[in-house]
Length: 135
Image 1 (cartoon, rainbow, N blue to C red):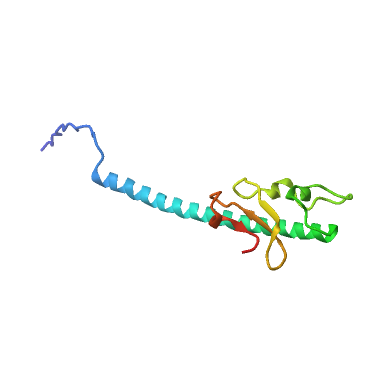
Image 2 (tube, rainbow, N blue to C red):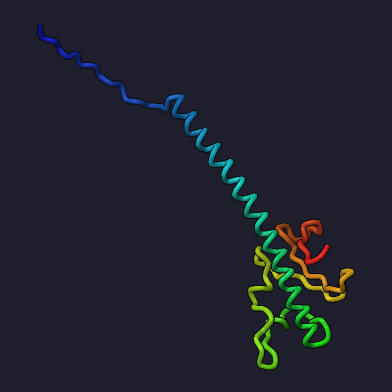
């Protein structure tokens, strides 16, 4: 008995199957969920970095006051070496994580008599978004 091969012509595929589409959609949903979590983490970490930056500038301002008797008029003074000593801060230390300069107001002081140092945060112009060295 000889088996004969039948020639079946395959029709070319012109579309995706439902299963292929569902797998792609599932992958996109998972990637989108991961992306949202990562961006939320990045925003939170920038806020924490801004808080630490304001605190570091506050420490430099206090050191300046100890050496000179009063708070500096502006933050740029802290980047200049004086009397052969190194500067209190570098220029890059005066920029928040969003690339904007920290704000400094020596006249507004907390109960501890520290000047106000703050970042505008992610949304400049929103007072609730400010990140301060004290509350």
